[in-house]
Length: 332
Image 1 (cartoon, rainbow, N blue to C red):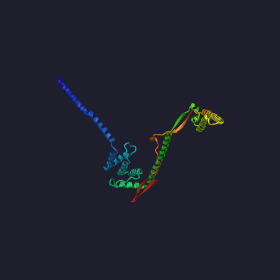
Image 2: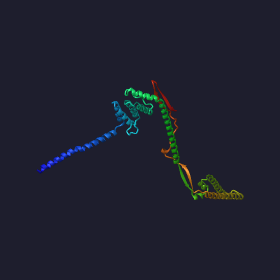
Image 3: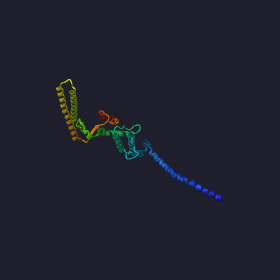
Image 4: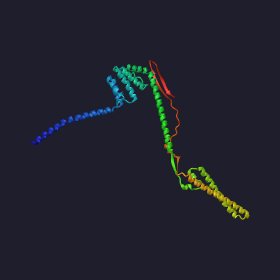
């Protein structure tokens, strides 16, 4: 008896659970389906969006077609068309849909904006669109010939001004880089001078102080005095040892050598004292010098030859009642 009651209650619980499962699963399925549709719409590309809108036109749903293309061409919409070719196609279909709902004035405005955006825009294909669409486009295009020429000339002038500005910016950037390279190629070297070096003879102190003229003068003078002193010493020893000469000759030679030794010796001593004294008086503790240094090859500026400007040409076609022509605008 007890086991029968237990089985009865167990069956009731199972039935209640199975009955509640579909109710729980339905919201989950609906949420999943909604998310899947949103993701699918987000993943829908420009081609699919354009095909969906053109399908509305092909099926004759002109009102829905107008709304679809208005949404695709609105610059404030995040999912607007961005490809110029697709925007041009969408503008043609948009104008055709507006003609289909009787909004011819709005269709003229759409064609006018599309032509201003691309003056070389082709007329709608007569195999895809009715004659009313093609005629309205041609009429709008013919009425805008002067405006197209002015717009094309302005576009060329803007392009030329933009190219000139870019050229000026490139020149300014190159001048700035040249200045930076010039700064990088030069370095400041600090030469620290020594008092002991200033105390050396033969113009060493003057060379250290940067007075090269006085340094060379003292160097040559003192060197000549040293050579004269050495020659006079040799002459004195020569005459003292010369047995072939008379006493008067030897005595005269020795006296001349001693006189030469005296003159050269005192001159050498005086030049050394003057040079050392001047080197200490004009002593400069340190000197800052600029010198060039070689940069790595990849940091050096490459030599560029000036290039002549390339001619620019632009053609603005126009056509009217059985007449086809065009205007050419350019710079040379």
